[in-house]
Length: 70
Image 1 (cartoon, one colour):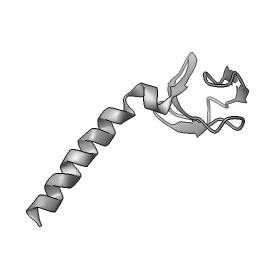
Image 2 (tube, one colour):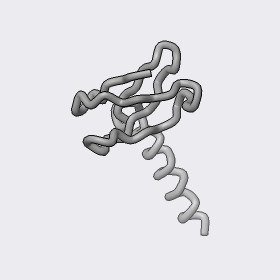
Image 3 (cartoon, one colour):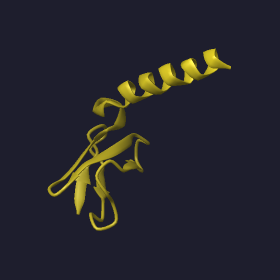
């Protein structure tokens, strides 16, 4: 199934049978990391626009906490 990169409008050929929601792919044209938001219908979005910053912050906090305990 074809999808369009939201950053550069490159046509991406994605086999929905081989990807799962939450999986990341990379645009061949611009290198943007894209998350599979939904497989039916196929929806993709740039990784940093889908809340990965929040997860990075959570990881940073727990990682800092671990260092304090050592």
